[in-house]
Image (tube, rainbow over all chains, first blue to last red; front, side, top):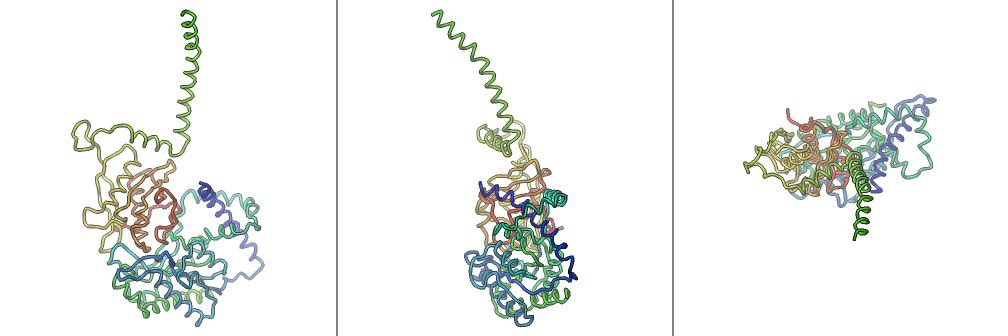
Length: 263
Length: 207
Ligand SMILES: [Zn+2]
């Protein structure tokens, strides 16, 4: 019960925090020439891990193993060719909460966040590759709350106490992605184009969905579904080193195009 | 004897106003509870459902024929793995929440035309509550979360089959929160955020 009431109050506080940051942003940058921030750090998020296996293939392959293999290949490509800092939300088979995945990105001031998954459907025939970015799914209630808060923004500043430690940090994560939806959509498009060109899988396009891992990430963020592990043909591909390398290469090419376009 | 009678009469005379007052207070209390406490209406209804014998279900023939209504359910097709509409008759009333529970039970039960239910077959619909603010709270049994090793596509289909079924068929429902076994669950399998209310998404539905 206690945690429930806490949870109820949380969204309002989160909105306060996000607005406060949004309001403070322009003021802080006013003196500078204000170029688009260059991407200096990339956070790669291999989906699932540990007890949380993700989807399972009929041949016994687990989503968590495939996402980690692709993630490590992508890390090597970026480090070797771009010289950017790369952090992994996990680099071995461990459980990581969705909140912590976003926190790792934000703590490292990630310029891009790439979550890697292998898809699963109840239908074995389902096949193809797709790239997601966050859908807002904003309700009337949230819209009203934002309007109210915008009119009372002085109240915001006093409510955000910088001495608050972990709670504030977590608060800042929660709705952060809402400020990056447009760029995330662009990144999704570029990565999906490369996946389509390189994998020879059905092109399922870019889509928006309310994925938990993306909500708190404070930079352009996408979730790549490389292919369907629930489809035996694609499971075989996903388990192969060659295909995993092609997925990593395609994501790499997409994010290079995104970074170049921003320079 | 006479004194005793008088005393009894006196006690009765005293307690009558007290009784009336007490009665009024009780009625007031019930009214307050019913009108101001979230969910109580539903509990009262459930209590009545559980304790008042119902007329025989359809087929009994006696009395007014049990009314039915047609709802639209959403099932997966192999050809395009989109959600496809399928009409189904369910018993009508007494409340939209009752009908919503029946509609979701039919969604679990599956298609009559060879399509696939996106919900694990063992899922039970524990309760649907529809608030005055248009928020439907759906409580599904643990099998909903445990029945599949969910991938993103499976998770999206399961969630939006529930959400779309409720918003599409029941006018008072504008958005939907899904609970699992009476409690909030972050995701079914690591993907879709269940901690916020869903608006319907008909982009997963075949045209
Ligand atoms: Zn996944």
